Image (tube, rainbow over all chains, first blue to last red; front, side, top):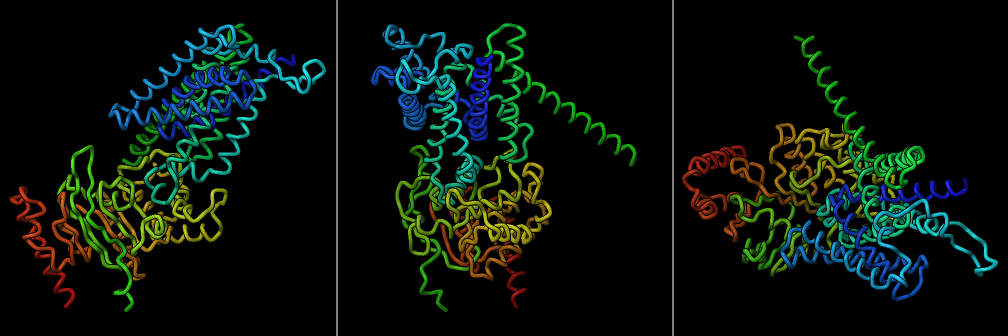
Length: 298
Length: 264
């Protein structure tokens, strides 16, 4: 029972953090960049572990942020200097980094506490068993799962960033040239957002893996985009979609005895589908009404 | 008059710009007077928008220097308001009219600060000046083209700048908006502010603007309408497309004539 609570709490924080960051990725048309960073942070984690031989939270987060920023910078440079298409350059960089990460894991399989399957798919059901012990290892206090604390820290960072820098993030997402003309440092905010994406994806790794985190970054934010009339609105809607996907997905996984993270991803996809369907029905109904009033007038 | 002692709102010196090795603008130099409406005119692909973006530091210069009131742009950012081309704006972005206008105030605010009551009042006045106040809670996607243009003009107005750079504000707008923009120009000029617009309509350029900068990859001419709006300059600027222009030039002489009579 207590395990269920940890799993649900972790999944909710993962989904909400991803949704909040995802809103800005969608609005800046950088969904692919989220995909890229979520994969290349694997290299960051492996390198951070091999260099420091520690799995502590700050080390993991730092490794992910550094590699995430390098991914963003290198993709941009390849696009500008190499004159490659921007989506092609992103695809080149992150697959390369991911592949290097995979090679390093298989080379140092004995030392790295990561297996390839877990990296790709994650396993949120195992989250409760990997806990942090506060104090000495024999008499310390078990304060709960590592994954939960990691995503909690990241969630607080993401939320605080959005609350403090809301206006800047809004202006930069809306119109970069306009932001530049107002003296806002657009490049800084770009890399700031990439930092948030790196933090979020690395903290989501244990729970949902590198592939499904993309679903959580993109889908709830996209559903929200379809309905929202303001940015604040869109952020709230994305959070509601994310949380609903977690609750329904968890129940679904329980009922079908299937993978939890996959069920959450599928649920958010279904919710998006329903939203599109609902909007289409609404549009058709409006059109019919419009025709009806026209006929009445005639 | 202290105007003569004050440095020009924009002085461009030996500006060169390229787009992927292709030269777009070569050796452009000019100075504009303060408190006037100034049009940047030239054929398609002449580099009008590029010039505006180069001046605003939105696209890199290969060479050259731009000074704002005798100082580099960094010192005069907030005194310079920019209105981008309508096609360059994501009109589906989830944002309301009022929030767009308040963006004009963000430059003055610190990162953590929210717009104050005064900021809201300034934004309100800007929207009222452009007859857009009743639309303040609309999402920008639910506006007509002309209304969208007015929202961006209100945003620039709320910045309370002394120099306004606009990229084709008259392109594809309705008559009401066109009138609103002309009214806005008058008000801004009365406050001694300077307006620079990329403009594509030769029929109205003599009527709406005091000054013209003719551009076609190079500077062709720059000066007051009375002295530079000549057949010779039009020929030089529009070159090969002259045959199409004969009617236009004639028409323009007529508008100038009409104007001259109006002033009498």
